[in-house]
Amino acid sequence: MLKKLYAYIPITVFFLGFALMIADLPRRFLVDAFLMASVKVRRRTQMDWQFGWARFHAWYLFILMGIKMPIHVEESVRAGKPYILIANHRSVLDPLIMAQVQGRLNLRSVFWGIKREMGKVFVLGGSFVRAGFALLSRKSDPCDKDRLRTMAQLAAQEKASAALFAEGTRHDGIRREGSTYQYLRVPKRGGLQILMDELPDHPIVFVCIDWRGLRGGKKFFDAAGLLGTQGQVTVWQHNRTPGEDAQTILDAGWSRMDMLITQPLRDM
Image (cartoon, rainbow, N blue to C red):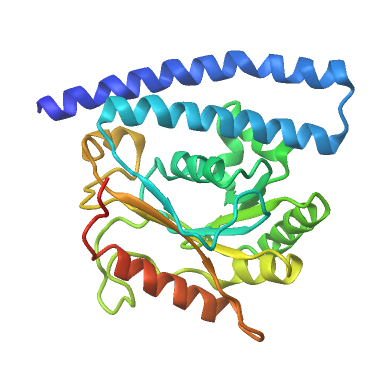
């Protein structure tokens, strides 16, 4: 009971932080208007605003919630290059983790394929649309491919990165009968294949978000399940070989993720 009551403290602080973020949005518009920024520059400033605030939210929330998720970037991943980022999805806080990963990789512009409902979120939804993110359905709408392809073409033009949570929705931590993976959902290949087709020179980087022993945490009001979590994040580059398709690459990445989540945590 006390744990559940304490969980409302970071939730309350987050809503205060969200209010500050909303109050900051007019400043972003005014700066763009004053500079008579182009559409490309406006997209960049939207991303700067989003990810700057996301990293700020991650900083104070993880302290308040006692969360330790150290990020290990393997040597093969060079900071500052545009990538295709592919991550697993387990918790409502995963986007904040990804903002930290983007910071570690010095990636300023990252186009995201996100679920369509995010485009309706108060204040944030409009920012996602203006940034050029692809709003995708959960039911494999045929138009999703066109949206993702348009986003990838923007990333190619602007030498930016592109990112997806390849499972399509959050895993609940329960292993399903007949599932290929113990700790992950089976990833969807279509999105990655489109990104590979449109961004053939972008290396593929996997991000394994390992919420070790997490119970709950799919929604922000499940915050009690996130308190005191000690996990880890592992980032590595996939070594592509000629002729590899998205399915082969995802099989390799997800097999390694499933293995990483069973291994002892790295020293913090």
